Image (cartoon, rainbow, N blue to C red; front, side, top):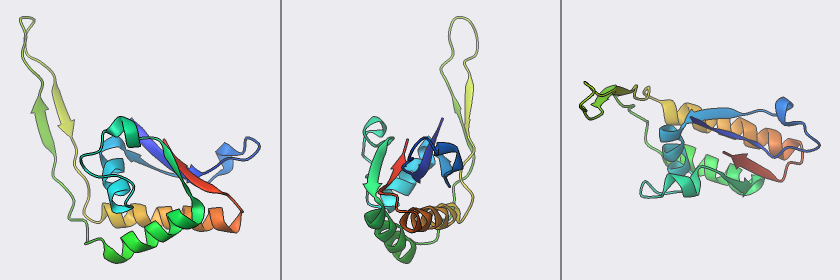
Length: 126
């Protein structure tokens, strides 16, 4: 699953809007950097939302100025419990590249600027 960030659509122009997407896990980190969530937040409560465009731009610029360089994370394999049917599944978390947060924040800055230039009231995600 993933979370898309984009300006609000007008008259069904959704396919022509600038957007960026993140995995669910990375979306939490982005929303935390923007001050729109905490790491303790229930994902169901934060996975969809909206923010006024000017407010969103301010949050992005603040996050770019204050966030330390993202060091990334390594790949981790989780073994899902064995059962009487045999071995359970192995789930891989492929981690995150160093600098990922800054790349996403720059993408969000461009989206917010487009939204400001095109009179879009909100940035939405879900």
